[in-house]
Length: 167
Image (cartoon, rainbow, N blue to C red; front, side, top):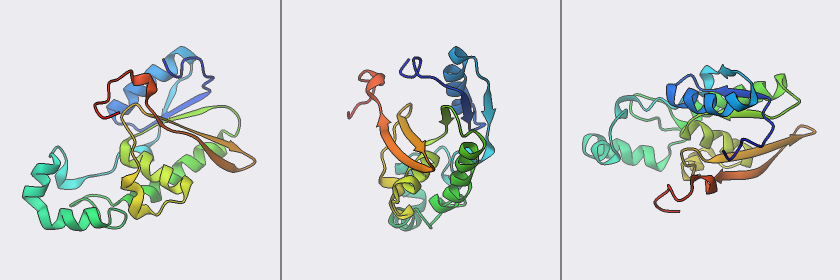
């Protein structure tokens, strides 16, 4: 509902089901189809997939410490680093912008992917990207004019109406 009165000309999404479902909800009222972009797929968290941070700590405590010290270059165990995600995701978004220079684009992706894109846009070092808070269903709006990006909204969650515990 938060975006229903905004003009939406294109919707791009990660191929993962949870992102596709969100993209479909956003695209349908605007009569646009969704386009899958593989490079928007969430970070590969390797052998930590499906584990809580507590379980990861028990299983891989020393490696987790190393990862937490620099998630930019230290990958998830048997997975990707934030830098690896940034290397694939930022150019993908830049291509979408270049190929669709007019209109409003919606990009539906995942937490780590969104963090590394925002970090890039703000000039935040990749090692600090994990400190950027982005909630599920949070809305970040970037305006692009004359080739310059301007962050207008970061992680707007007011539309979630109290669904976040710590907001």
